[in-house]
Length: 197
Image 1 (cartoon, helix red, strand yellow):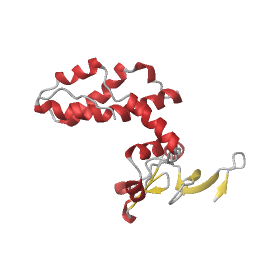
Image 2 (cartoon, rainbow, N blue to C red):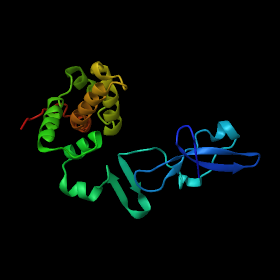
Image 3 (cartoon, rainbow, N blue to C red):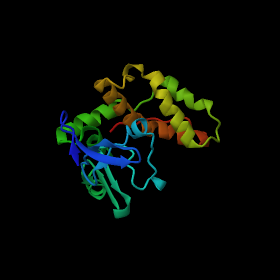
Image 4 (cartoon, rainbow, N blue to C red):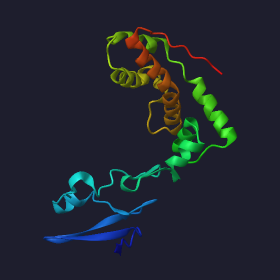
């Protein structure tokens, strides 16, 4: 194992016919470390082969750790079994978004934010009338989710943290309502009203 003297980045050296290349080592939050192969093709002309993607990490995530063979699924380091037993959907949503389970005050604020955004724009409600009555709910739901950006154009910038947060809260809030519309439409019941507790 080598180290880049200018950045201090740990490196792995890969030897191939005709040369060698230094590749960054990516340290895992949990589980096995990885080697970043991004520059491999451009610098060597070689690609990697990993039949079945058995040894390939598809992304770098501080949110989720999965080891399917061992039956492990953790969100932010907390076992899914523990979350399923002790936390609500809203608490787990908060955990995934903000990195920690909410305090009572944070939970109350977050819940209020979500409750404020559960209703759909009146024009979006009519959107469901355009689908055949026998349409499967999933394409209806996915189409309605895609249409949200047309109705809520104040939160489209993926580089603006506040806009991303607002879009996330809206999606969490509106998805159950959209799902209700998507599943009721085939049965002829278009109206979905919300009750507030």
